[in-house]
Image 1 (cartoon, rainbow, N blue to C red):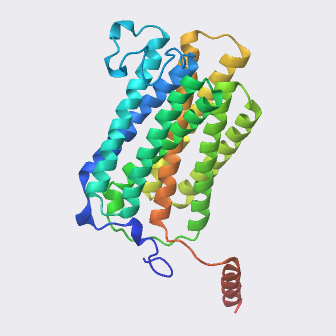
Image 2: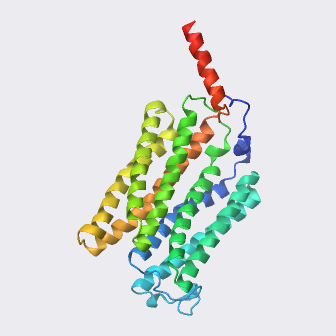
Image 3: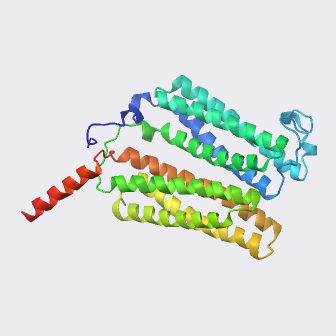
Length: 325
C-alpha cells in the first residue's frame, strides 16, 4: 500500500539490483568489533587505567603498534589494548567509508559513511586529548561519542542490508504515528541515560538524574514492547528487536542493581564489581542499538502521516457523523 500523498521516502529505498554485499559486510563487521571495544573501554574506566599510559599518540615514546608485549602489564595492558582495539575499529571505518563512497548509489548513505569516519576520528582525538590535558570532561565526552558511534555503525549495517535495499510495500496502521514517536522517544531516553551514566562513572555525580532516567527508560521500553506485542505480533521486523530490547532491559536492571550495591552499599569482590559495571555499559549500548533498529524499521514499514491536528479532528468528526447516521 502506498503512503498517503505518495511515497515521500523513496530516497531511503533502493532497487534490489543495486545491492552490494561488501559495504554491508564491512558495516556489520565494524558494528560487531565495536562491542568488544566498548567493553575494553569500560574496563579502562572501571579499573581507573585511563592514565596508565601518560603520552599520546605514542606509548611511552614507542610507536603504539610496536610497543613490546612484555611491557604490557597491569593497567598498561588495559589502556594500551584499548588503543589498539580503537585503531582496528578506526581502520574498519576507513574501509567502510571508502566502500560506501565507491559502491553505494544512495548519496545520503555515502555521506553517512563520511560522518562515521569523522566521528571515529573525533573519538580518537578526544580520547588522546583526555590523556594529554587531564580533563575529566573529555573522558565523559569520549564515552558519549563511543555510544553514538556504535549506534551509527549499527544504523549503517541496517541501511546497507538487503532488507533495506529491497522495495517493500508500506503498511497502513492506525497507530503508526504513535508507535514511531514512542520508539523515537525511547531511543532518545536510552542515549540520554548513557550520557548521565558516563557522568556518574567518571565523576560520581548526578546519581539521582541517572536513576530518574532509568525509570523513564523502563517505562518507555515497557510501553513500546506492549504496543508491538499487542498490535503488531506478526511483524518480525518489529517483534524481534522489541523482544531483544525487553530482555536486555531485564539484564540491565540486574547489572545496574549490582553496580549500585557494589559502589554504595556493600563491599563485593573486585572481579565481580569490574565485570558488572563494565557489562552495564555494554548492555546499555546494546539497548540503544536494539531501540534504534526498531525505530528505523517502524519508519520504513509504515507510511508517514502528514495530516495536521485539525485534519485529524475533521476526519474523526466525519467518522462519528457517519457512524451515527
